[in-house]
Length: 221
Image 1 (cartoon, rainbow, N blue to C red):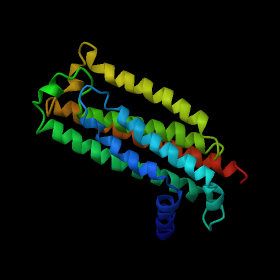
Image 2 (cartoon, rainbow, N blue to C red):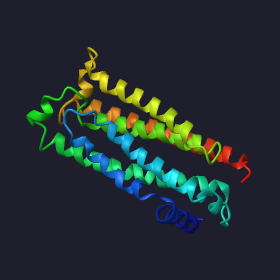
Image 3 (tube, helix red, strand yellow):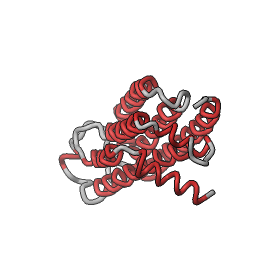
Image 4 (cartoon, one colour):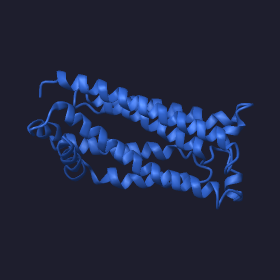
């Protein structure tokens, strides 16, 4: 079983994926940009994944996968594994940017004068939450038909930008200024919010995966 999943993952990475899915990982570095809503970087990463799903659909990837000696559940699992792999790669870049901004650049005037969300551990938690929304709404929505991409992606766009707007606005609410901490200020709160984002990501992804498996089993390919 372990070798089967390894082979499925390699198929996703080498045959099914669009080059844009890999290129758009670099948008994780948007966490370095001052005066810019850094969480928009998560949207661009998921846009690359969307292009990958579109590329795979045009290449009849689902039909090809169905002809392989694997279960429908494994086809779904392969897609989720690849999506999470790309998200994890971008999160590494985001975390690197955050750690540099929290240490070397913590007193930089260009970041101190930033009216938008700072790149701290809360921002990483927000990125995890945004990725969880993508997995729940778009990836889960795709497996309702294993073909239609437009409606779930548009729904995801609306929801994720609403979420980004709320997260960006939180530190402007009296009493919530600490969520926009610089460096290691309020580190306990930052860690709690990071873990909350991770928990939300895991819950949404696992829930989406289970629903996707159930829906995909009902589709007659």
